[in-house]
Amino acid sequence: MATKTFKIGECCVGGIIKVTIGKNINIKTLDYYNKEVQYNKDFNIIFGGLVPHIANEIEFYLGGITTSFYAGKIVEWIKSSFRV
Image 1 (spheres, rainbow, N blue to C red):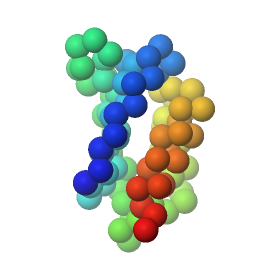
Image 2: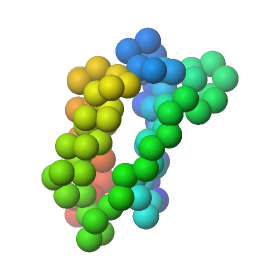
Image 3: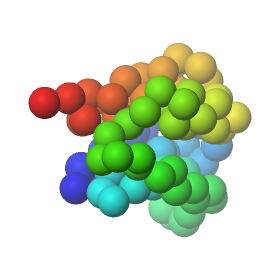
């Protein structure tokens, strides 16, 4: 299981995005000060890996809660965690 926290600040709803990769990909947005969950969404991993349409769905979801720059960086990290 891989977890990474992105402290983005004012360019993100809540300020913090926490990504956890396990049996599925979980993306949470947290409030910067009190760490309460603002949004929470799971994405299914198909065939034990990240398929292109799921990566696009994740980037589209992230584009609604942060800028496209940070959405791209987060998806890039997710993709790198599946590489061998």
